[in-house]
Length: 133
Image 1 (cartoon, rainbow, N blue to C red):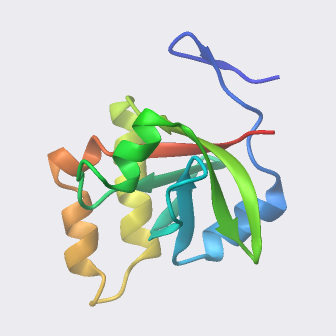
Image 2 (image 1 turned 45 degrees about the vertical axis):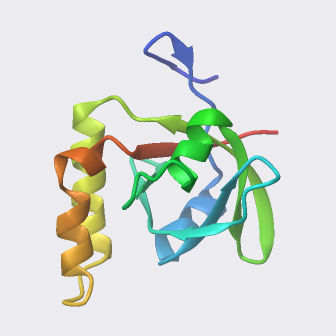
């Protein structure tokens, strides 16, 4: 049974096999609803939970699409998995996601992007991906 987070029941989460694959994945394809195409995003796992963050918060981008239609899918290991995108309000979790990006994407070429993900405006575009049936 899920725990309550800000008055909302949390889903039980992804199984260990999916979490392992997400930890290894450098790019994850996600989409909101059925109309929005899969978009490649960086993904991190924190406390056995899955997070993504938007670089550009454009009106037509994937982050705004999930705000309008939270149900969608992710493409992982040649299969689509149904997900729900939930905005992250916790300052503690946002900081943990930032640290996870720095650990996972630790190349010189990634530094610009990791530093950018730590900017205050981008912290607000953090989504948790939860499984849905």
